[in-house]
Length: 141
Image 1 (tube, one colour):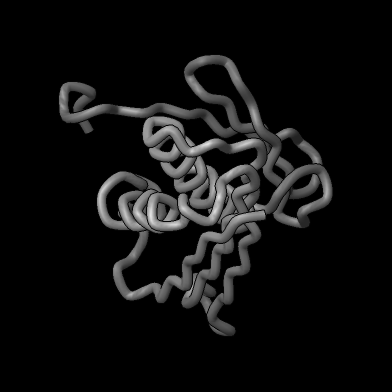
Image 2 (tube, rainbow, N blue to C red):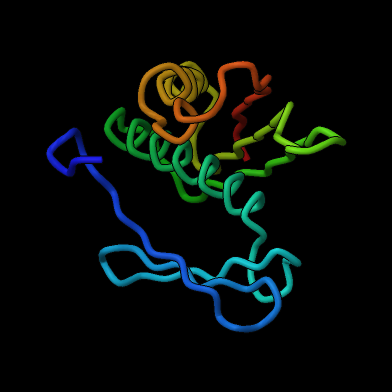
């Protein structure tokens, strides 16, 4: 893979020497612990759900801020249903975003922000298999 193609991202993952625990680091020096037992950190599949929710939440917050919608809090509750047999991929993912601050008249802008994240901006979502069913919603807190 050539770094001249697109916007290349590089991360490094190293086994900690303990159980199924790995330390991941990004080029900026930030790190995350991943644990196959979800004890010392999120499991890789939980990290995937967190990445998806984080990507969409960043999009939504950015779009709402640019649309002058007041936001005092934004949370995402995520549930992923995995297949019973290997490779146990996600088959269904539900994300409920709750935004505190907007008034009732801002709901169309909230829906637009969610739709734009889903259709255009969220690179994590668009990197996943196209046959995963997504149930996404946004609401005022």
